[in-house]
Image 1 (cartoon, rainbow, N blue to C red):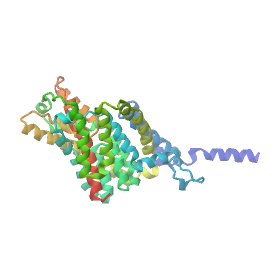
Image 2 (tube, rainbow, N blue to C red):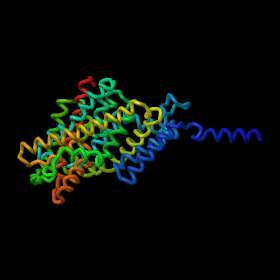
Image 3 (cartoon, one colour):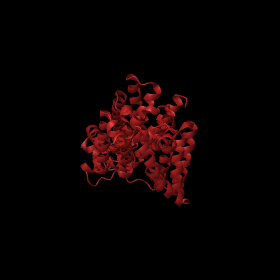
Image 4 (cartoon, rainbow, N blue to C red):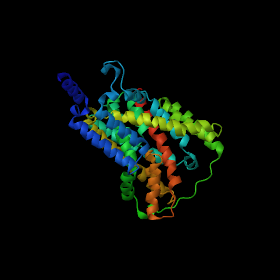
Length: 382
């Protein structure tokens, strides 16, 4: 009878109920909220679902991301090995390969002024960097946090790993992907506040056709120029442009399909679940995380505002030929930010089609955020 009681006692204490803290229950609730946003509201579900589920798993079973040193048999948890691929910058670079294979740089090539709009939107990153320093973050941590303003999850993870900020990678990644998901909610009020109805209703001229030669040369030229100036950006910019070269060359259809479909989805599962698993209650529920979330929001809002304001300046210079709304797309969240520009413009005039014009700053923002990360790595000698 005693043996039966001991067995039942041991079984009962092996359940998670005896080990969960209030913080764990809070994080489980947050994970469920993220799942609601992803499934019900369809906010970036391809990444938010695995991130939220990884968050759920680690707060029920912390050993799922335990390192080999923390286990009795010397074998780490399943998601520990996934997370190592984040720290080594492998998964973010592969994400960029897939993004490149899916991205049409034609609008950017057809309207090179989009580069300026994409660059203007990076203002949020550097303003948040200065603010992070004021809030007590060291230089490397401030840089890793501020890159959230680019609304580019893979770049945020990449930079955090390169600058040795693995402890902050979870909150940074969750904040970055959360703001990417909330682009349709955060951006419109800022866009409307900074523009007039007349500006929002501006129709832009149709983009010129882009030749196949231009499309093929573009990724090669960008790779050479950017990587010569900032060699540390080669993993991101190089993979982005390689994926785009797959797409535009027309001779490696199988590689294009693999990079933009199967590989992208596999990497998304590994990246999302491992990032979610880095958000245990002990690591996530603290004042540092609150600062990161706040700074990320400020950076994203400043970046959106800077893009719109620069768009207003170009509108003035070109005598009304550029709709300022497309400047908000420079924050890099492809293609959602461009769709938001289209939506806000269409609210003023349903016949106004800004999507392709907004895609120029949008893809320029992807390059711009990678360049901003390269600038930080150069500053800190990485």
